[in-house]
Length: 431
Image 1 (cartoon, one colour):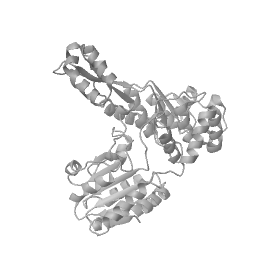
Image 2 (cartoon, rainbow, N blue to C red):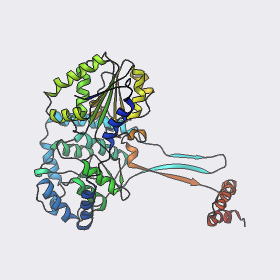
Image 3 (tube, helix red, strand yellow):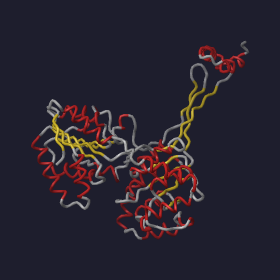
Image 4 (tube, rainbow, N blue to C red):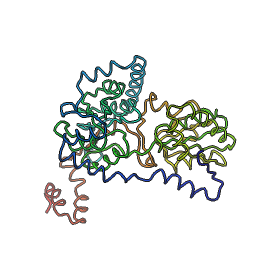
């Protein structure tokens, strides 16, 4: 059973804080291993990639086989059934439609003094996309990462994906082809992140790395940040559901488990003001668990990390939500818009009883790569903006420089930076 808390209990704050802290502890136990792998890849290049691929994926290949050929990609796509390809195309269309609306406009104006100011946007040149290939395949995540990059105008997207026993899920490769990704390498883990960051004889380095992965991949992204950009440090996935007693408990139960089935470290939280409803949800969870293919994973997640929080009323829910700052927030209440208006911190909000979080994972349109572990307090989900750079534009003529220059000279002199002050005053013919 999941842990149950009530905000009426005197020790609630400490218990609630402890439950969140346990989930948010950074994973450092892999840091030394990852540092060694990265150093090896940086030193030995392809040879290191081939050794790690044989050790971890059970596949012995030569350097020429690191990159998938177009024929291999096409062959894999031909294995996909028509219904899956149709669904993939449907999702891709909706994701593209939403993200095209995010493209920013160039800013340019001349202020009252006569200084022309603005900002322009340019795409990142090269992006590395990491695609997991472990216990589950996620073609949907590939779409969510690759389509915004293409819309932004990124010229080169290099994708890495592990191929245990020489197999890559065909639908993943179909999603890559659909997204316009043709540069694909059969390598995974921290070694793939190292190859993308440092480059090898076969893999040209990129400027930014995006995409989810296990603890080793996350640690590697953290360690190469600064050499390249990264999208975010993503932890285990999470959902918080605020639900009143008018919901079908079976619906809410399966929404909780939909998150739990991702990973034994995932967290699902229910907030409700009705104890009887909470009991019925827990009973429905047990009913669903016996029929789920990933029931063992979902059960471990629910029993170890799940929370049910009983509040005096649902007006108190927004404050609890903001303390969690969840990746996913479902508001299964009568007036979800009103409750959402009081929430400041959430990666994505799903409004109403007929909007399960799973719809956002696939076909809603907004990105499902979202901030975890409370980082929604200060960051947002992946977007087209993550693949763009903004450059400020400034232009003065003699008259406008004269109008603003005196203040700049004063500030430069106050900071003791004589050359700064002189670079302005010399243009104004001042001593």
